[in-house]
Structures are given as C-alpha cells and as structure tokens.
Image (cartoon, rainbow, N blue to C red):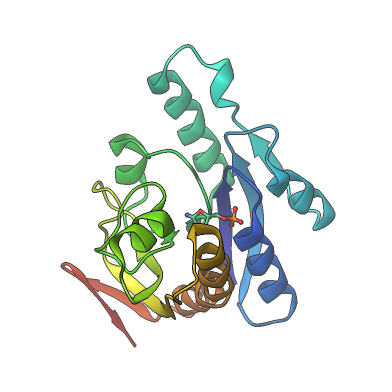
Length: 200
Ligand code: GRF
C-alpha cells in the first residue's frame, strides 16, 4: 500500500475525491497527510472529517519565500510519502522541493496542457474561444505545468459557457481523472521516459 500526502491550498474538492476513492477501494493507497500553506483552507475540515493528519505551514508567518519553502520541505520529508499529490496548491514550488522528490509528485491542471498554463486556465480557454477544454494530470518538474503528462480528459466548451460554468464541468472530470492517475501510480504502472509517461 502506497503512502500518499496531499498538498492543497483551498476548498479541496479534489482532495475529497481522492479520500472517497481510497475509501471505496478504487485506489490502493493510504492518505497519510494533508499539507497546506493556508490555515483557512476548507481542505483542513475535510482532513479532520476523514481523520487524516494535517500539517499547516502558514505562508503568511514566514519572513521570506525561502524560509517558508524550507519549512514546507521539512514537513514533506516528515510525511515520508511515496507520492505527493498537489491538489489545488496555489503556489509555484521552488526547485529545491521539486528536486527532493523526483518522480514522486503529481499535479492536476484545469486545461489540456500544454495549452493555458498558469493561473485562470479556464478563463484563458473561454477567452481564446477553444471548442475543447479539459484537465491534465502530470508529474511535477521545474517548469510551470510542464512535466510529463499522465492522463487527460476532454470537456467540450459550450456556446453559453462562461469561466465558472466551464470550470465546474472541468472539475467533474478532475474528480474522476485524478484518482485514476493516482491508482496507476500506486499500481506501479507509470514509467517516465524522458518527456513522456508510458502506462503499463
Ligand atoms: C482545480 O481546478 C485544480 O485543477 C487546480 O486547482 C483547483 C483546485 O480545486 N489546480 P479544489 O481545491 O480541488 O476544489
């Protein structure tokens, strides 16, 4: 059984989908920690309900980003996880953290990468007028949303879609595809080959 730790900053609906998938036996893993930079994150309530230990590394209490990242790194080492799952972690991870866990960190992004990296991906999709949007689960490397892609799901953009409507429909797919990718990882079925991920 793999040990997974979730890193989240906000409402944590993806975190909840992961908790539920593990509970339902769909993902052979134990969620051993929630790590958050935000003491007000709703994800903390979800962790408490699921009896998952929570480590709060409150960004606002540190004198610099560097010092914050040292504390975050320490709490990640302490979690001793096989996999770190970034589920709405709203900061860019520094190189020291990314390098500490090669091939052991995945993220979900609400766009079909490599399109629309960074913040407000759904808004970018609506503004660009794309007809197909979606979400991507990928390994984290030092680039912005640019690591090897594990799984993607398409979501059609409807004529009446604004950013929120599209985000909501993408989120439904995120809740399916993220646990699926974690299951593949936990079953040792993901092989990183250069820029690509081979699924066994
Ligand atoms: C999701 O849209 C995810 O793709 C992005 O941040 C959002 C997190 O939502 N990285 P939630 O906190 O899981 O509800």
